[in-house]
Length: 42
Image (spheres, rainbow, N blue to C red):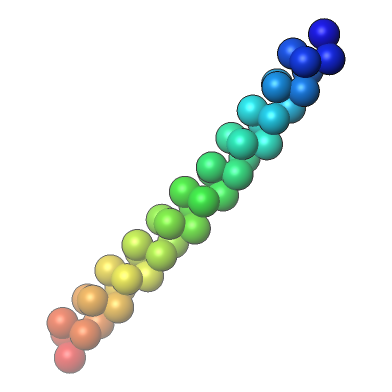
């Protein structure tokens, strides 16, 4: 039971970690796009 519980918790933590990384990457991509658009407009 303990092994199953620990792996389940680990999966939750890993999933949360992946979501945070994905959000950061999305924000970076959006930021880069905005920068490219502003430089292209100038």
